[in-house]
Image (cartoon, rainbow, N blue to C red; front, side, top):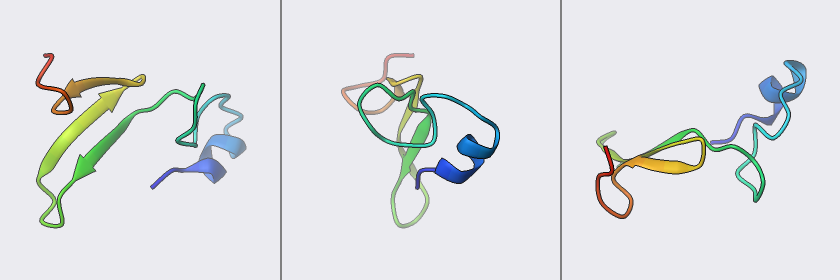
Amino acid sequence: MAAPNPARILRLKRRGEISPGFQADMTLLTREFAVVASMVRGEFVYGGKGDVR
């Protein structure tokens, strides 16, 4: 879930949306809440195309 309202209220630019040009910090979960992948500043740090950290 993106968070456009908190980002707008805090006047954070390029945040709060999953769109080209926006910074992405997010975690993808299964229905059982197991972590599948994590992204920090738009780069996979866990999962995705293989673990990079």
